[in-house]
Length: 149
Image (cartoon, helix red, strand yellow):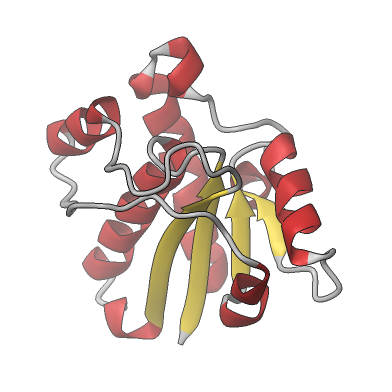
């Protein structure tokens, strides 16, 4: 089983979008029994909150199923539980490393690193542009899935 954890600052926009997009891609590939996929935050700001309405709207618009989500913060134990801890931007990666106490097994990456793009997933919390975020998430998740399969 391949265990993937998508991580952003609050766990209501980018990481949840990546979680549901990647789950859908894995399901469409007929490989859902081979993956365990979750998302989390580096901060405590949104703990317990559901996915942002803008993210839900973008997922709905693209026919990607999602369910009620409860934002949670990443823990040091997640480093041992997951094979891949995937941040959305450089600040996420730094905070994941801080929370996990480093990255001795090289599990922590930025999502767009998998697509060979040295940039961050656009944060719609600040931009309001869920289209750009969705495009970035699709690019990263497609590359990640190709890499893992």
